[in-house]
Length: 383
Figure (cartoon, rainbow, N blue to C red):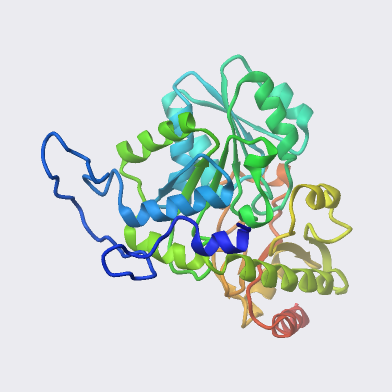
């Protein structure tokens, strides 16, 4: 079945007891066993280790990504943390995209190094830089593409080939495009990671994460960490995320169309110094964006003439765009990464990778694009 059919039907069946079309929310801590000899005969014992509602979502995401298995987590950062804990030991090394979500940066600079894990932040847009960063003790390559917030792309197939040459797993944070637009496992990656909080949910209603593995062997390592750390997604969140999945494609197509129109508007505005969107021909990696994904997504960033004060003035002046940290929702959001999502990234590191103080990030939603443009226009007029 095609993706738009699978996003609705994959992994779910009518409830066998009542015929309910929606998977029930199994809000239960524990599960009564028939006997000692038939322990786990129905597949569940304790909801930290597995829950029927969460399992339905995991099956759906497995099919949508084309993987072997999926594990759903309490947050996107819990999914990223589980991936690193599953594959890295003290004294080992990982390569991470030099532009990455602030939480990933904190994990790799402030938490795991305390336990002897080493990290190199490499320009993963340059395969040679990745190849040169591989050490004898490298055990993971972790890329984020498009990267948050600069939208820098990584050639997934090229980096996956380097990973295979060295027998290293390649994990891809696929949050910004989802499997509807980008399919890392088909491009050779070993794991696809998501903050389901974003496009899978799409309604600013939940926080969650997922890791889809290409092999059962990798999944078993992820599952062990999920159970041991108690970081499984809750059944309520899993149920809501399953409902969001059903409209993923139509939401993303509409949001992507809005984003293109807004990027073109910004590109032609006299007070905008620079606009970055993978769908624009001016985007440095536009050809890779077309080759690697079937859509350009709904994230844009730009800089306003006048630098940081002008950018702040704009963000404080818009009315329809909500000043908030999330992305991927039906509501359009504006974010100042230096103050919000990437505040803990060292100033020198931010500047090195292009996260400037005046960078304005947009997550384009489903409102009428004319209204969104008019609101930006009135905000820019006040700069």
